[in-house]
Figure 1 (cartoon, protein in one colour):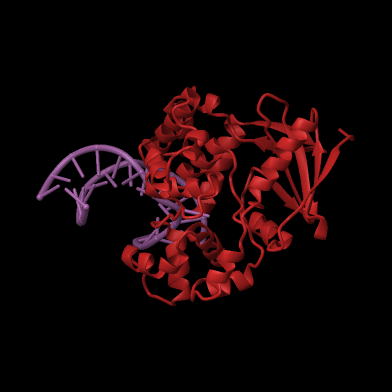
Figure 2: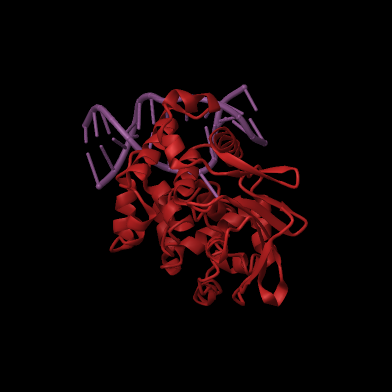
Length: 299
DNA sequence: TGCCAGGGTCTTT
DNA sequence: AAAGACCATGGC
């Protein structure tokens, strides 16, 4: 595994490697990647090919330096480039967001403190939906524990320099499971049903990222998701935000978002849905980025 | 140690 | 449409 390919990916001016790496590092017990000494490392599943291993580091004005081990050919390298570009959300022009946020009482401080942070996404659709379902109604620390058990029980892995790196379980694997196989991980009965149900819909082809991208409007995409058992308004908007990159995705019921507002306004109670809607009016079409930045206050 | 956690479904009014 | 019961486990 000594031979590797190397690419540089240009980044926009509104980009901070440090801020994005810090976001990844703060995700405590994360099992899908490793951050160490300025390097972000992970395995990456390429459909129809063997998985690759990548190492991302800061190349300053040259953008991101990505080293790739195990790429079959140039097509594979292009797929990796596409994945990283998507993961770091490098193609969104943040200037309008920053212009709006400068005038906003909640976002002012956030864009100052986290300038250059991108909405680090979850490009893989099944991973995004699964992570949303796993995280429902439990604290984040436990959610990471559950995801780790899920991945290390049903995912595959590759080894690189003596360390093991995991690939998220495929929907085919999860679709073939029974609830009894997930409950021992401390998933609730319901969560187990939701995960298996979603996996089956994806395997059947009746729930796909492509169908959501092809939806006529944001509301249509949201409806396609909430029609699925186990996906309510919060999970739908979470997936639209982290995977589909809908700028106006807005997980209204999100406890983290509500607590961030409570913290910034020094409130005794979390704001109501109506209060949140009122104060978020200026965020129109940037709700997704607003939410992502406000989450950063909670770490 | 009791409250709360990156909610959702199902039933009842 | 809106509200309440229930789920159901660990973190702090």
